[in-house]
Length: 167
Image (cartoon, rainbow, N blue to C red):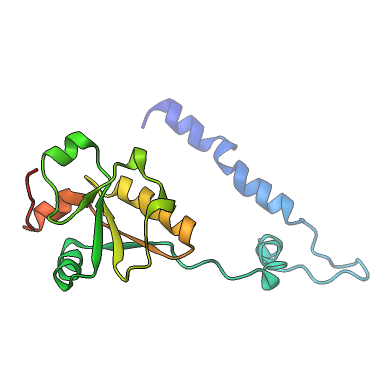
């Protein structure tokens, strides 16, 4: 540890947030003041401020994104109740796809064009799972129902030994 590091640690600066929190909570014990409620434990006011009006607030919405492992997706594909959509670029798709997948690049994806009423579950995938999560979130927002994607994308699919078709 350098002399500068030691001097910084010994200065009152690292303690500033703690000192501000203590000061914000009042510093008076409440004794000797008539009509005041007894002081609560340190931080009590902050905790109560966060929950005071939350009793009437609705519960958070359920997660809008469902992630599948490669094994779970393979089982659903085998059962025949999946509409698989590849949201990668044209160049990526040319390198190979999951058999049976449709291609709708994320930059051309419009959730309003996705039919969700044919009884099949729509599952998105991309290279690593980031873009498919974006597409699934967009579909979930448009339909109000959770949407599904392949966690880890085609990289996880291939690592799990699942088949890839060349186009």
